[in-house]
Length: 119
Length: 148
Image 1: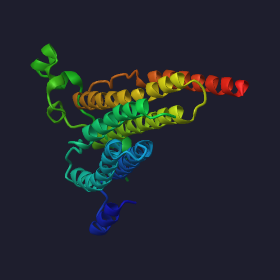
Image 2: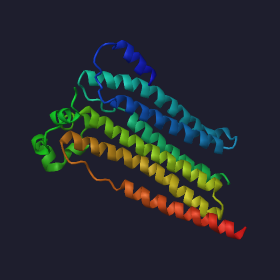
Image 3: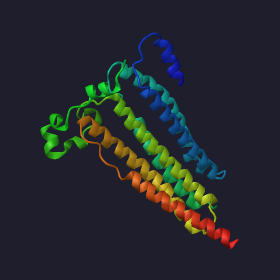
Image 4: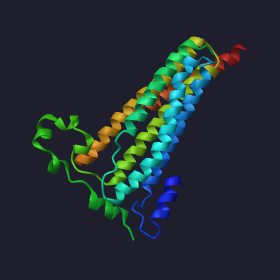
């Protein structure tokens, strides 16, 4: 259960849950797992940078993106539940392109880094 | 008692022909319009399920990238072959992330227009590339074992 979930549970104590299938919570957890994946790959790239500060920058940026995604996932869970409650669509407005661009950039950087770093 | 099937059918979007405008019928202009403005809002559970599917593909892409790094660093054998194999896996991770984003958009658009969801070649492509990569890594490991 996420922090916001607990907060929302307290706030809506006694009220019927708007998200009957726990879709919003599952989606928030999927975002959290993805953020952890971005963080893991970024940490791997930092490890491969071999003490070169310049080469660490993309990995550090990836870690920052992972943290931002974790924070946004929490905020978005709240937003999604509120949208569902208001019978409005919870269509993504930015996190999907953000994670796509980040993963593509990490992929490009991985190829570049591995072509310069030996086994 | 909440009935899922009843709720889904009650909120299922109208059929495509009921929603299509003259523009979309003639020129496919809806492809360029923002997702928020196309068709009608589908059941929110479909939208979130589409998003989770996209995220599952992104995690697959991340796993491919990690596997590519591992191949370059840890698989024994010729450096050229290892690097080539690793680059293929990592590049595929990047391509997969971009392709899953496009697929997410196509799915959402189809749901909003009440169309059938588009087929995707990504699962087959990933399976083929992964099978070939695993086979190559296995051959490298066996050759190294025989030589040493």
